[in-house]
Amino acid sequence: MSEARVEPTQRVTVRAPAKINLHLGVGARRPDGMHPLATIYQAVGLYDDVTVTDAPAWSVGLTAPIDGVPLDEENIAIRAGRALVAHHGLDLAARITIAKGIPVMGGMAGGSADAAATLLALDRLWDLQTSDEDLLRIAGELGSDVPFALVGGTALGTGRGEVVTPIADNTSVWWVVVLSDEGLSTPAVYQHFDQVTPDAAAEPPVPQALVAALADGYTDEVGALLANDLWPAARDLRPDLVDVEDQLRLLAPDGVLLSGSGPTLLMLHEDVEEARVAVADLRERGFRCTIAPGPVAGAHVVTYA
Ligand code: C5P
Image 1: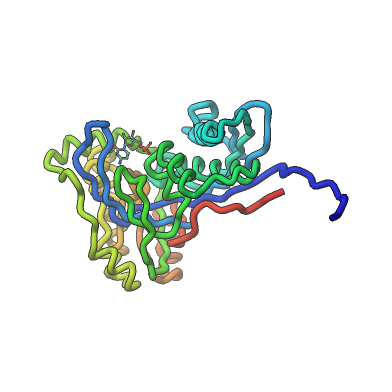
Image 2: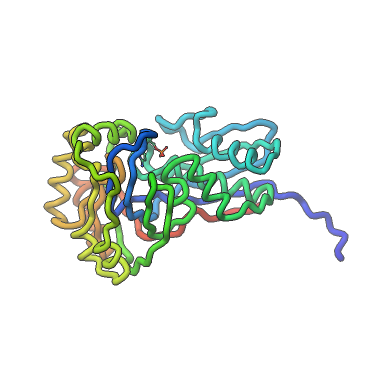
């Protein structure tokens, strides 16, 4: 055995992806205020990097200032850290630093990505060896989209979105992501959904045709089957999105989608050159947009020092 001193881990960085919902089927509001979902998640290549270091007290910071991200106990990353140490009955704390690449309040689950990344990063920093089952359960208690950020790829989401089952996806696509200068509140969109959809089903059906098209790798069919039940509510709350949507449909009649509860809009491309041409065209018209590949991996360690 070597006599060399083994230094404790100082710093772990985990990268977690944004998500989109290829299908977002929303049912009638449950007694607990949440909505039953039948959704197909896909992780796409926009990322937040979360770095954790051991510290005497919990704190969170951003590598660059961004409006709309709370920097106190309200931040979901701190709530994730506290939930993990509580699960293990420990009294530990950390400094959490987030480099945001996922749009804030864009309907792409940036906060959920931060929570998932924090859980994984702290588990590795302190070598807690939390089981996958426990990590997913803690993630589900933090937010409906957090378990999927751990899993990544393409998956069916049921319950309120927290029950995640990976599915076969043989497509490999490029999303043109059209950003909005103003965010949209997820609770507000769900609340408006209740008003405009009084006949919502108790249990939304699983979109079997889309599941089959993904397994078969039929991108055109996937494009034609994209659906989001929150779209009418988001359009009501943000009428300016209708014009953006119309312009996108001129470029891609099939394959335009509202991301989650919005306001980010998406356009599907199988060919990256076509996606690049669309981005150049949209930028010329004054839109803020970028390209993200899908599907990509869930939260994973990128630096361990
Ligand atoms: O679970 P999460 O914290 O991401 O949810 C944020 C808000 O979105 C909830 O407080 C609720 O208003 C709404 N929501 C919902 N039904 C879901 C998921 C989210 O009503 N399945």
